[in-house]
Amino acid sequence: MALRATIFKVHQRTISRVLSFELAILFNRMRTALLYSIVLVLVNSNLPCHGLNTSTLFASAGAGSTSKSDYVCFHCRHGVMNLGDVMFIPSTLSARTFNHTVTGVGRKLMLQHFVNPQDHSFDLVTVSKANVAGNGRFYEEHSWWPGYLWQIAVCPHCRRHIGWIFEQAVSDEDAIERFYGLIFSQLSHNA
Image (cartoon, rainbow, N blue to C red; front, side, top):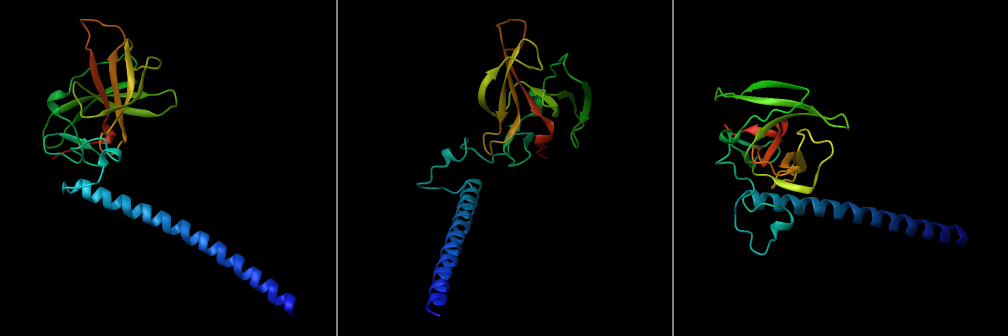
């Protein structure tokens, strides 16, 4: 009987420790999610956040700003580009080129369809200016515009992949020095 009571107590302590550990993990996950949600609400509300270092969470101080951009990030509505900055830069490596009519504006955008070496496909609009952040280094290999280096472009607010930055590999006065290829499905018209 004493052996049975001892085994029961050991078993009870083991179960108690396991449950305590699992509850601690669950509590930490919930606490992290809640804190992140609170920070998102504060940053997007444009209220003063004294003592909160949002630069480590979001790259842009004007996060969520959509008032001056015709197109915004699909995920966070941060302003990305204006229709006035669209410039068609044809690529010989494009699988196809097609028109897209901007609803409510009646303007047509030329989009180009590309497939990368990993077999992911993208419809890009090319622009001379964009409110994006570069991520990583510039690469020469697999460029969709020969003679240009490319770098991944992300939304400066939510850090989602939104396109690429293209820069001349070798300086050429007759060519465009820098332009942006933005993934059209990652943009939303700011009506």
